[in-house]
Image 1 (tube, helix red, strand yellow):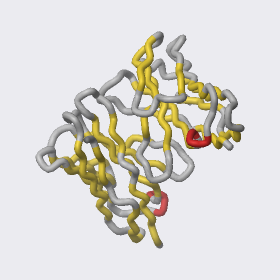
Image 2 (cartoon, each protein chain N blue to C red; image 1 turned 90 degrees about the vertical axis):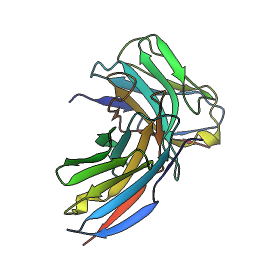
Image 3 (cartoon, helix red, strand yellow; image 1 turned 45 degrees about the vertical axis):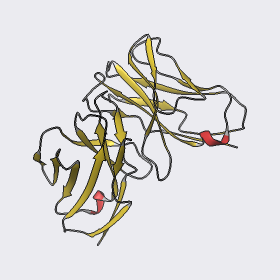
Image 4 (tube, one colour; image 1 turned 120 degrees about the vertical axis):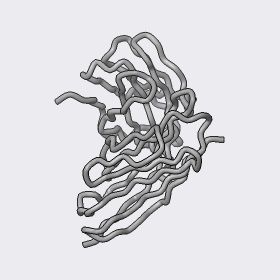
Length: 109
Length: 113
């Protein structure tokens, strides 16, 4: 079957670094997306990885290992506004997105 | 501001009633999608359309129907609502099907009693 696993909830401190992990099993693979969703709002795009390695975009970076079926989202210099849910989604061979349930990130001062 | 407009924002509905959730985009995107989001579950695709005039079934299509008469509009209809359809519904669009970034609407919270 197809499955995306990510932790349900994480807590981190303002100014610190946090890594949110995601493991995926999809029928074929055409990339891995990360979206951010603030409570009561729509998901918004953060990153897309299709090749192995690290993609850096400001305070946010995303890593992919296709051989391990693994990705992580790294958030540096955490700010209170980073409190949100982070959704991992794998794109299968039919170009269908398979979504994880999301990781709720709580930032404490 | 370019984007997706969904209506209504929130609705309480009696079981058995018919309901249409509206979705309009102004980005001239070819592909549009309807997802439902339930606590503890990932977004689940209900129906999609890769271009005006065509639609397809997603992961959880039963009890829902869609139409795509033009590029901009993609309404979702619940013919006879049931309590299990209580959810937050998101409309999304992308330039095309495939490895494209989705733009989401703000969501429609539907409660079926």
